[in-house]
View 1 (tube, rainbow, N blue to C red):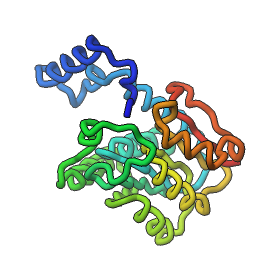
View 2: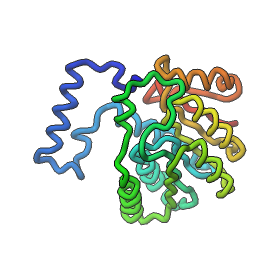
View 3: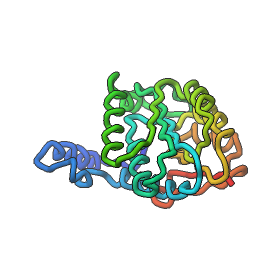
Length: 238
């Protein structure tokens, strides 16, 4: 599967490896992370910031379907602290196997790309510690929920258990079966103003395209490109 590195060249890959080496040098990475953050990740932050501002008046939780290391859950917590510091009613829910892929329908994906998304068996414990540290920094009472397992199974059960509205869903997956199953499971919990983000859109993401076309998403909903990253779409419920 091709990601943002669809335009990769030997020169770019060499530059990225150079940055990785320099990260081990003298710079204080904790206070100077932008020395090493590439454009694609900065654009992702701008996308999430753009969309977060659309739900400020929309009640409901934030759900991340496909979390990998859980980085977006931290971005969402910090955006909450920036934009609505006194709103601690939103749960931030991350769903993943936290081990790697369990299905790859609609993906043309090489084994090395699959292996890239594997995490250590103890990573979830580390993520929870990171989340709690950010809560203390923000003086926040945000509730993080990290649900481990196949999201086709875990998400419907969690939604039924919580019985709470959903304001924002961030889809960082590109597999057809998972998209279709989870999209339909979430629909009863969304309201006017709720937003879904599709991180992966384009000819290389056949599973996403199949889901969007077969389910007539463009006809049923308002779908737009994200301002700062045109390969990402957002859907608004009206």
